[in-house]
Length: 126
Ligand SMILES: [Fe+2]
Image (cartoon, rainbow, N blue to C red; front, side):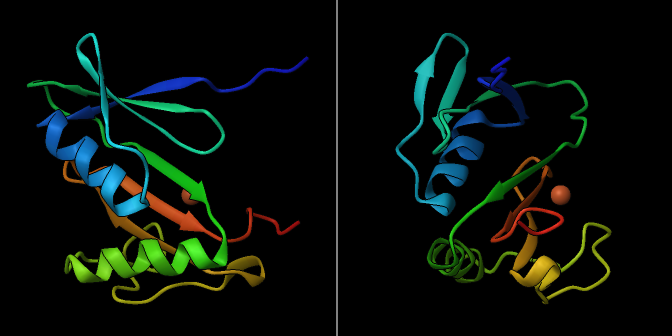
């Protein structure tokens, strides 16, 4: 079996704002329109399809494994934008990062309020 996540929908209040935020902060190619979506593709070919909704947004959690160098770049852009960030998913350790599994990790929010996370080691190490 080779089941690969191919795409998922990310709800947004303003899809242009959310998709551009994601692409810019993560250093990815510009969002591309696809039907009602604005698509951003990450390195393992998963498409995040930003979709605007005026319904209540259910906050989701999206975590990304990045290299140490990419962590510096992405986290640098988070700080340059003056975004709040936390070392933990419960948002108790504000302004900190974690060193779980021998790497680095940090949480911040996208414009719709989704919890984004970057880590340099997968949970559990390896
Ligand atoms: Fe997580």
